[in-house]
Length: 446
Image (cartoon, rainbow, N blue to C red; front, side, top):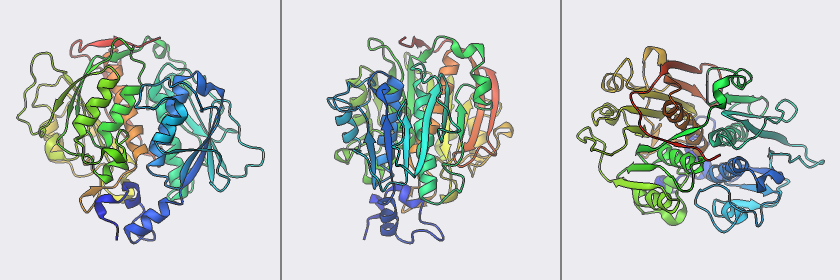
C-alpha cells in the first residue's frame, strides 16, 4: 500500500471518475508516461536552449515516470545556466532524472533548435521555440522557429513548461486537442498575440532585473520562482538579495513538484536547502523560518517587493500588513479538474488583499471584478495538494515577468487568470505603470 504522503502529486490528478481508483494505479499509469527530446548544436552555445532542455528534463522526470530520453550533443557540454548542476550538461541532466538515448516506444518527441525528428518517426512531434518575451509550442509544420535568442530566459522556460503540459494532457487523455495545436504566449503582453507583441518597440529595451525580492513559501510555486530566478541573466558579479520564508521540511510529495528538491533532500528544511543552492550561485540570502501570519513588519534594507506562493487564503489576507510596496501572488486550481488553472493578483490594487481573500473560495475567476481566487494548494488527498510541476513553472514565468516589468517601470497588471488546458477564458487586466518608487534593479548581462 502506497503511503499517501509519498504519492506523486501528478498521480492524484489521475484519480477521478474513469481514471485510477487507487494510489498504486495512479503511479502505475505515470510509469507509462514518457517522451523523447532531440536537441541541436545550439545546446552548446545558447543559454536559453539549455534552460528549455533543463526545464523539460527536471519538471518532466517528476511526472513522466517512464522516462525523459535525450538525444543530441550534451555529453561534455559546458553548463551555461546557473541551476544546481554537475560537471557538465549530460551529468546535470542525469541528476534531474534525464536518460541518454532515444526511446522508440515513447508516443512523442520534443525538438529544440535545429534538431529534426528521425525519418522513421511516426509519433507526435512538438517544437519548442521562443523570441524575446514570447514562447511557442506546436508541430513544426505549424510552428516555425522563432529567433531563439538568449535575451529573456522565462520565455524559453515557458515554452518547455507548455510542451510538458501538452504531453501530459495527451498521455493522460485529458484533452483531445493536446499536441494537435499551436500554443503561443507573450509574457510581455499576455493578452496579445505574439505576432503583435514582437513588433512593439518597448520589447527591445534593456532588461532590468529585480535587485531584492522576498519569497513567501518554498513549495510548488516558491521553488518554481527560484528556478526561474537562477536562470535569469544576472551578471555573475551582481546577483540579487532574496529573503526566503517557509517553515516546512521537504517530503516525498515535495519531490514531485519542487524543482529544486531531490530525493536525497527529504527531511531537510526548505529554507536551508534553497538558501544553500542560491548562495552557491552568489545570491545574497536571508532566511525567515516562521509563519507568514500578519504580525511581521519589514525592517530597513529588506526587500519591498514580495512574490507569494502561499497555500491558503487566510495567510493571503495579511499580505499587505508587513509593509511591502509591491506584491505578486499566484494561486493554482482548486480541484482535480482545475489543477492546470491559475490566477495571479498584484497589490496594491483597487481592492485590498484582506477584502479580496476573505471572500475568496475558487480559482476560476475574472480579475477585472476582483472576484474569487483559490488556494495555491489545490484539492486535497490526505492533505497533500494535487499538482504538476510544469504548471507551477509556467505560472512562475508570468510572476517573474510581472516583477521585471515593474522593475523596468513598464505596464503591469491587476490580475492574470487562465488555464494551461485552453486559451479560452484567459484574462489579463492592465494596471498601467506600477512604480511606487525605485525598488532597485540590476541590468541584465548582455
